[in-house]
Length: 154
Image (cartoon, rainbow, N blue to C red; front, side, top):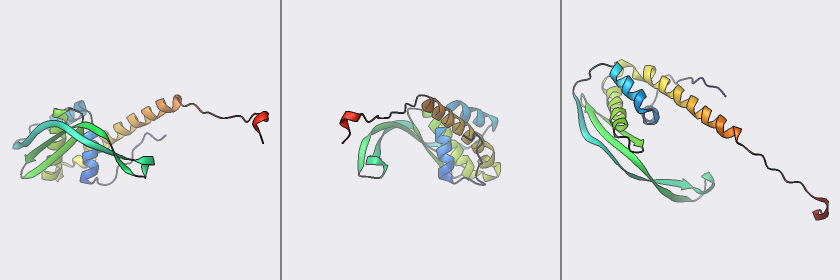
């Protein structure tokens, strides 16, 4: 498997938010601190946890059904007239706040070039974690096969 990620020339906002939502709290805290003080950040909707319905499809393409609920945390912040929104899995209030802050920052100050500096690093780390999990799962794979016995053959 390839552990190198070739980042796109530019991420869409949806791609950027997906990467930020999957990042760890430590990664985003360190990235935020490294930016120095950011003034005028206003919390519009404080981070709050709640439930979201998870839907699935039978066989991946069939009939839609409600799989169950999962805990989500959302936050909305404003920076220089731009609103940042974030939804993250679990009860991670600070993570949602930071992800929303980065969303607002990327909109308000595109010249900071966070799309090319922060996101590729986060995406590469996430890809490595995904590949590691895949290798661990692959190591436990069991191949089953059936032998046809002579007395049952017709």
